[in-house]
Image 1: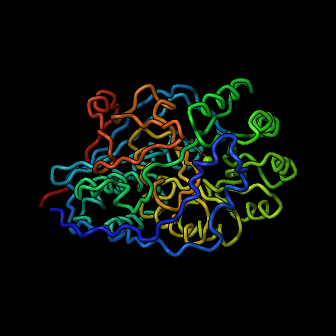
Image 2: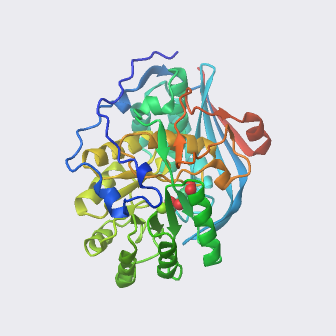
Image 3: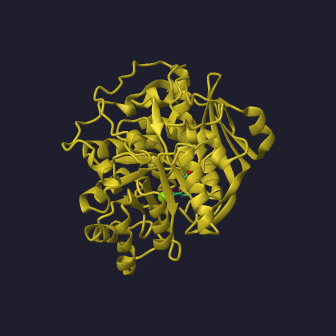
Length: 428
Ligand code: OSB
Ligand code: MG
């Protein structure tokens, strides 16, 4: 049975520098956007996320499944190219309700050491049994149970997302409401992979700008960086432009990277090693462009250390990379209190992971456009109805319906499922 406590919404409403006004050609430069943030630190977000309680949620069944969704076009980063996504969905069932989550791990251990294979193993053999062992009393309870399993954040996040969706549905709230979101629409950008030709890239920039996307992020690597950014900036002097290196450089490239300082980039994401904080701090101290960390921020403690060391000025929060809502909320609150802008990263998710990202991005500290693009930017057909769409002002509406706020296209999911496994609670 679900026994519910009233939910407190945050009383601190951050006046957002929502970037909405800074889309093409407006008076804002990229640097202005960052300095728009109020100078004094925010008071803490008045939200008790881990107290959002269903006193006894006895999960009866957990289902793991994978399905392959072809990408509309290949996506190339400094660590390789893919042309489809093996989507890993998890659902949890209790009292006739089902909550859905997504494990964002890729097939190969390149962005992260986790893969679909490792996360399947860790969920089936460790996390699901821990979740089923006794009724779950809160997100915090789940996080504590998962803490004894080291790492494997994407696996943990998949189950946390599913549980949070279940909780939201059970309490008749949207996910955004449940976690203390304050926005009705979130600002979005697009992440453009490395292209075979510069013309191909410029065409895509034009296309996404004309669709309203508020920020263009270019994937870079040695050999596809300075000249590409120069061309893009020359053609679009006022857009919010950023780059993401996915760890393709080292401190030895400092002089080379500093050439990027000429282009008024909103940020450079993860230039150095995937788990580094120290060298990023060194680079940031000699570099005007704000560094944003993605791969390096795996826990709230790492976020605090990065801020204290000066390793970055911006953090990309991905629910999967940090291990679920419990951790993502903690990082959000920490950055919000210290006035460090955050934005919601993406992992080429299906609509289920994307719906969770939309809810996360509705929190007050998410003051920069996220990598949350329309379903059609990735796939011919998504697993939710309606699909995610981007409005002409470059925002995605935050749904108000219960849970994810989108209908799960179960027929399509069932047809496309390649592998399915159920883990049941043992009834004594
Ligand atoms: O580094 O942000 C990244 C996709 C897969 C793995 C890592 C990253 C990305 C993206 C795509 O940049 C963001 C999206 O989902 O659109
Ligand atoms: Mg990144």
